[in-house]
Image (tube, rainbow, N blue to C red):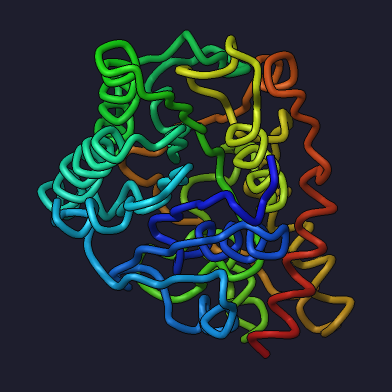
Length: 326
């Protein structure tokens, strides 16, 4: 397809993942519309794109059906990233998480259906695996959700499945596994662990690990996530649509190992960081002990081949944070 005539709506486009998607698709010549209400996104993430004639910004909330309908006008593909992330946030305030992640999702799906959008790709979550202890995580084997956030993301998958069967709209869900990288916000009560720890170590503060540090995660660098979104959007394989995919590297790292690598890479810039001790706190409610994705389905149906193993991605992220946050 010729990119210049292809229109993409990225909801949550001023956020961490969304702004990286905006940047990538603008660079490839697509016409990009970004919808965001700045609840968790930032104006500075999209500032560089505002002068691009192929970029349109709509400030608005997915909880408003009229806003959703306006945003999808003339759009070919929706990359739906807008959501209230964070397990702890959802435990603290389940109502708002449900309102944004379920009602907002439904508003976007309905708007996309009514506008005749070609395909609706959405951010799903590895939290959907819940209490399933099976490793690696395979798409069709899930457990019971462990948090309100996990429930909302699973409901997204159920709605997408019903909409594709009932209304014929093509949907693809991408179950993100602990995404990290440039522009991920290190501040705030619900900051993700990697940017939060980077910020603390750069300030010579001890990071606090929940539990004994042996919980493990399939940390996934942002460029692998961009690749999956592009593959989901451009695939012409009829077997590849109306389903969900793990979006990960297919490898796992314990929190202890992650901090060890962080200290190692940051100490290239500041040798004192290598000596900063780690503090251990209690386990966090709703946390899955271990997370490791099988990426076989994405490899087979989408030709996915993650370019960044964890350590390579972490080096890139650390460099970006050092240059942009110091």
